[in-house]
Image (cartoon, rainbow, N blue to C red; front, side, top):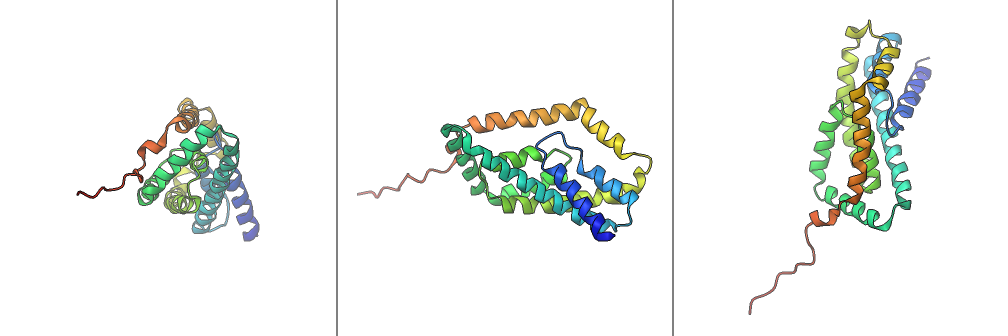
Length: 197
């Protein structure tokens, strides 16, 4: 019974995190399971965080695959963006960890990372760590949300004008990301020191 519940939880959270936009929030699934299942909260958090990370990783790989059909100029710009990000990998990991703790949607971030061909395993590991923390907070507060139904949470997410505007805005931000010549932000490697005579 526990294995079946975990598998269903994993598949639901994985499916939600495969969506590039407009998916219901994963926290609502965690709260639902916390209130309506016999699974320990720690297990709900770990399974959900792993499923969310796997879903976002697959989403990023999907965008990486779709990036093959972009024009060459955009491919070069995105490759340079990936190099610029990886030049400061520790900053990226820290930034992503903080981002993962926030309520902002992460789908577009992973779509951009996939398009920029960033090394995704480090990226996903930081996301997983951040989600462990944020999902633990949601699971711990599940008892205070007993009066909130899962359907209401989904409906509020899908109908909220601010939520819709944020999702659309983050999708639209992918367009200028592909247009920027990111190579301007990379350190020049062709500048060789000249010896004085």
